[in-house]
Every structure is written in structure tokens, then in C-alpha cells.
Image 1 (tube, rainbow, N blue to C red):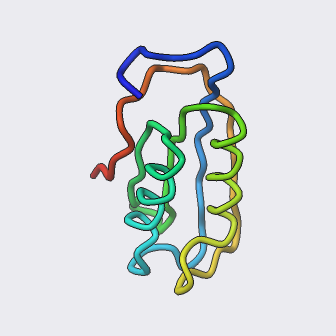
Image 2: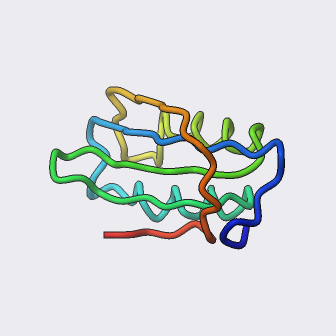
Image 3: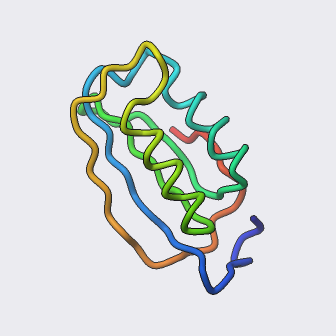
Amino acid sequence: MEPNDTEPNDVRRRVIVSGRVQGVFFRDTCRQVAQRLGLGGWVRNRSDGAVEVVFEGVADDVDEAVEWCRHGPTQAIVADVQVTDEPVAGEGPFRIVG
């Protein structure tokens, strides 16, 4: 997805994932999932030990990526997932930031 290249059915969701989610390849695996689904956005580690993700794209694909966050990669132990809908911002290709 190119910046500001949004479709009418696109959605944006911010996801905060807590538990044992840092140091277990969560960000890289999340990037692979998002890229496979053709989503825009980003993922980063937070200083509080959580992982923060923004997914943007077709609603069904975003929902699939959010669902993946509920378990993460095999080494992760996800304790909580908070999802917030946001206005679509035209995110570029999915990337790891921070």
C-alpha cells in the first residue's frame, strides 16, 4: 500500500500486545504476517515490555493479523491484547520501527 493510497473498505487498528512478547521474534514474524496479507503499518517494542502494532488495509486482512497477535510466534506468551480502531492514515509498506 502506498502512502495515502487507501480504499473505501480499508481500516486501521492499533494493537498493544503484552506478555512475553519481546525477544521472541514477535516483531519480525508480525512483519512477515502483515506483508503476506498486503497490509501497511508498523510494529515496535515499547519500553514497558509490550509490543505496539498498527495495521492498515482491507478489514478482513487486518482482522486476520490482529487475530495472529493473540498468540504470536511460538516462543511468545501473550497475556493481553488491546485493539483500538483509528482513522485510516495511508500507511506505507509494513515495517519494523524503533
